[in-house]
Length: 252
Image (cartoon, rainbow, N blue to C red; front, side, top):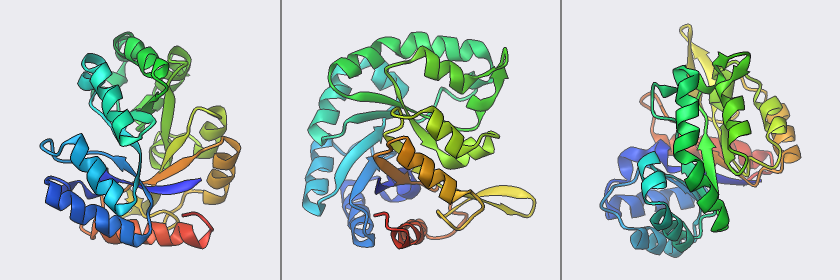
């Protein structure tokens, strides 16, 4: 399992080409060798991203791409990912609010199914990233179960924090999704002042021994470190601490 950085963590520092270069240089200097491209400036071209990553010897593994583009610009999105050398086309979530009822999942599958198939035919894989709301149950089945069953060609970017937040066991879900989670998100969870918070990997309360065992069993290829909220701390230092903790266990 190769450790990478999810750029959403440092999204405030990726809005121009110059910002992106400086940010990726810092990430490379921490020790990360691969990335998830997410939330970068809209004026930055794919060619510029590739140029920077090639210079810094950073592998682009996966993106977060908008649902609209995946559905309506499927061929262009495929071409862009092949140019970047990224096998995985990631979606961050359902449209917010639509995951609170079963019909939202039905509508989503109808929207995305054709693009998922075309992406697979092109030799790439569509990847769905979970939050906690997918663990709501409808007719004794979670929304996540529905997506897994209805999108057999899709992969899933399983997020350890959000599975736990939804009441699930990250290790159990990894085993359930064996061979369908080539990329996962690593983030920890702590309790502060009665509220759950995101934390650097191995700095919180998740059962990491169980998670790492399950990741191996499920054939996870890449684990992207992500911290959506750093609560005022320097996000680069958060990425550094997670990386150093993982490196002590032999991951990098």
